[in-house]
Image (cartoon, rainbow, N blue to C red):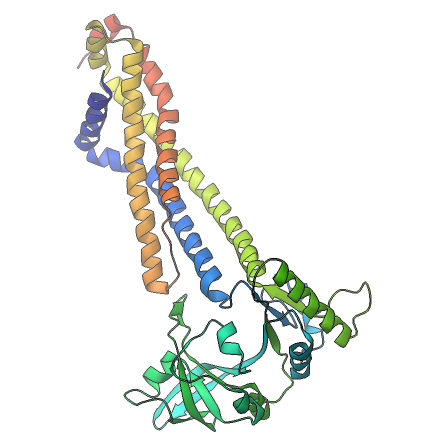
Length: 408
């Protein structure tokens, strides 16, 4: 029997028994949809982490009291015992790091911003050196950035995020406006480009002031995060990170053989850690989805056995007209594979749909990968073929005389 005719017959059989088809394909649909949804969301998160969560470029690294990602309570306690990095440490690195193209520092907290009757809460208040915006991959789209003079004189000037412009200074030209950050007046000198949302949380609810002004207002007992730009990745980045490590170890009197009393992170370090974590999530999701696929395959095998029983006389007629055992077997294999393929296609659409709904409702990034769609369809079809072998062989082994005597 031709492949095209077998495929057409399989679709007709699915359409003729709609309810049975839906129940039969449910396991395959759930399994494939789960895999596609998880892979789509994880791929989107991987891309987003690489591009936005760690905003600085591949040639920028940080030195801080503790890493940005802590995986246990023991690590947290250990890192809390470290001495903080101070503004003096930043100045020492800025003056002595020969391999660094530029060096910056960051302090931050949360607070409120007020202008007339408009205000925001939980705003990210950043204390920046004037070198920070370029290393933070932030463009000032209106006005100007911070200057060395602003930092030297602890000027009360601020760069604001898009949310502050839209909600606090709505309808006004923001440049030159006075805002109050935790009750302290500042003059707006610039507006940063819009960053969008991460997991439904806006990344534009922030203000940045000179780090010296920040320390006058909030004190200098918080640990500074030092940013350094190497200029290029590879050997240059390695030289710069090693030089900063050496300078900090000497300044902080870390003993020979003792581990660093600070943490140096690069973009690749964070992204690699995130990918290892996301890979674990994906593996668990795939394992759960595999169970659904196995259940779906067993259901397909059961339905195909029922189909063989229902079509015993049809099989006898085909054999009597000259159909070979391989023809009959191929027919039922194609039908079971088609059934699973249809389930896989529905599962792919469902998985992508679920991922898009999560993106719309929660702001969680998603990215549909062609390879994941192809793998989902191939796996679904393979499940149909594997679990269709036994029913197909049983149909092929039917004696044509016995099959013709079967009642309709």
